[in-house]
Structure formats: C-alpha cells, structure tokens
Image (cartoon, rainbow, N blue to C red; front, side, top):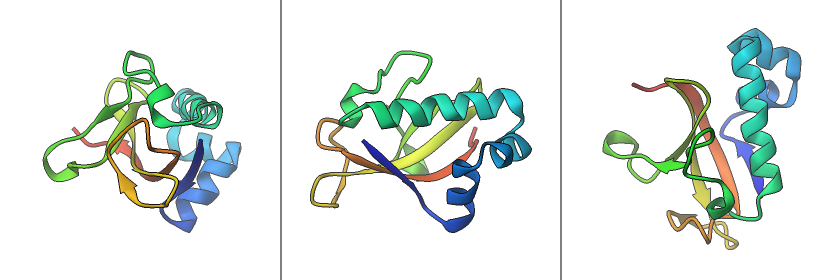
Length: 107
C-alpha cells in the first residue's frame, strides 16, 4: 500500500530519520517508522490490524471519515484513505493509498 503526506513539510520529515527523531523524539520516531513499514507491507488497509500495536480505527466527530493508527498512548497518525481510482473511501478493503494528514495527540 502506498502512503503520501498531505504537505511538503510532513513529506520531508517522514522521509528523513533524523528529522523524525528531531520532531518526535527517538521512541516515537521508531514507532512512526514501524507504522510506515506496516503501510508499505500491506496491499490494502484491511491488512493493518485493528488490534494493538497499530490499532487501525476510524475516527468520529470533527475527524469523521478519517482513520488513525496508534503511535503511543495518545499520539496517532491520522490519515484518509483512497481506492484504486483515487477516490476518497472508508471501506478498508478498497483503500490502497493513504494520505497522512497529521501526527499528533488529538485527545
């Protein structure tokens, strides 16, 4: 499965291990990289477990339609999913590309 970042700054951070550590700390950077590796290994979002540690889940409220995977107790990678036609989708089995919107504590 392919992943992309929403903006240039986030793309730069995700592609440089030193910037990951600088922005999120060593432990979180390691966990972020693990989640990115899981995205790389999966062919669609349904292959990302809904059990911990990734705990892929849909969001509600003002983040309705987005998904998240866990980084730590409160930190999440928030993303939206796209199908093969590059259409926004909420069906995990159809999602083959994710666009990472943010990495933060949204609680």
